[in-house]
Length: 275
Image (cartoon, rainbow, N blue to C red):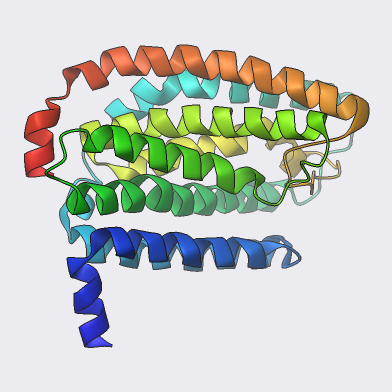
């Protein structure tokens, strides 16, 4: 086992690939485990991804997790505008004719912790592990940053629709738009990871991005959405398409703004050598 671990330390890209495979297997196990089971399994997966990240990068990433958190959240704030609007609209829409849960504080806290586990797991894997695995394996390639961005964002997008039914044009179009919006959001997170190497800040913003649209469901007595395929047929599919188009437009604006504020300030040549 020790030999295998030492081998992985010398093969960062292979280490990242193994982490992705393990994560995909773990995600498949999430279906049917219930909310508590999903939260526990995601925490386990997050810890496993942290182990792979340690094999790849050692303590470098952990050393930066307490730095620039406020800066990262401030810069990434534009990504949270649409989720905040959706969450507030949903709460106001349900509030007038829906009872408040008697155990809403526990439900709200549980939902927040669930989304935090999702954000931590996905950011450690799709941002840190994939980026660092490629970076350390292909450091001498000057275009390694482009490779990191393409691979991490596309894998992140594909994972969200890998179980979706794309047998119809409408379903396929939704899946493609979902990949695009996930890739946009992932790039925003990656830009800040390059700038600060603070994966905790990225995980926190990711958790807010997932939590804010549906926080009312933890307070009000409404049925939670259990469909995780991100596509829908019929009239619902048209609505989903329109929503994804709006989300893509908002995230594009946010991505351009973050690119100007962050990416243009990075000395990639120096960063490539010192990462």
